[in-house]
Image 1 (tube, one colour):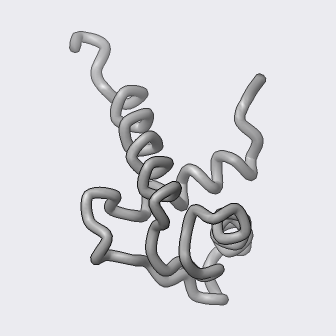
Image 2 (cartoon, rainbow, N blue to C red):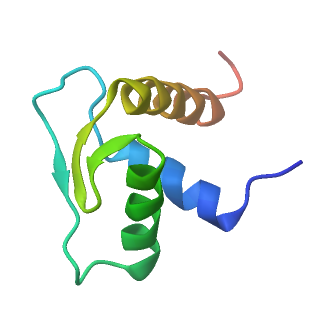
Length: 81
């Protein structure tokens, strides 16, 4: 099993959010990288974000973003930790 380019794009999109607050959303403009636009659409379709062009995280999206941030931190920690 491995991450697909689509799932990596979705995780990168989730990293754009700040899961600690529901008051900060994002806006993905139609002129953004098509990979990012498509990832946001898929996240919206599956109920992770409130708008197809970003918006806010849903409860599911908040959990997913927290996990994405945690995984990113773990993978980028120095080996001495």
